[in-house]
Image (cartoon, rainbow, N blue to C red; front, side):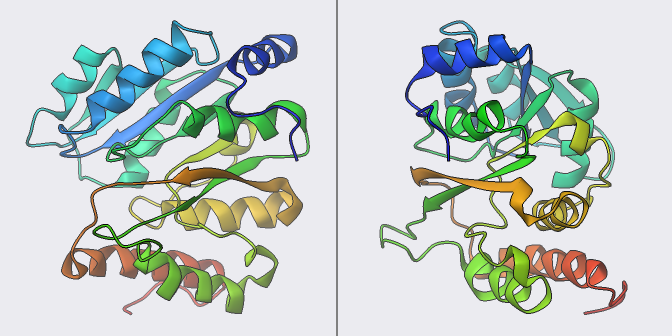
Length: 255
């Protein structure tokens, strides 16, 4: 939908400045010391200092027990440390409150093949189309080196739930994508889920408030990250179910 390519950083930066908007990149992170510095350094070197597409990079250290915060700070991010109950959505709320950009990009900290196109691709639709409110990343997800076997919670749970309960949003290929960009004016009107239900909750809420046509998707290529064992996905899946059913009118309660 955009005539601006993710790789055309000078053109995107010019479009941003012509629109008179600012951009904040927010990264919730918990125990991601091995990868967060690479993500932050790419952002700071290429998109902040390199072309001015991004104005600030904030990492929210969500109760890490490793050197996530120190690694992010050394790479050039402003680091906020949470001391309350951990939760991805809580970290995203704190990041939103601590930043000022008109366009807010949220990224995951565990991506091993991160590139500047993860951010520039998400921003392009927002810079060329005022009707777009939320942009979700689309990507291929290998699992232990096997192509297209990743995204188990997405394929087995999130997408079937959307197709059944919110069919107007069934076109969204990666409803749980941590790579997402949103207008601050819209973000300020949302109540984010405290945990792993945050992405699907944000998607449904934007669709309800602004219409499904306000949601865009961009192809970010392949995304390689730390794949969790099934036992660690049970809690995440439960929170995704709870956030979706609550918005479908089923109400909170045990699963």
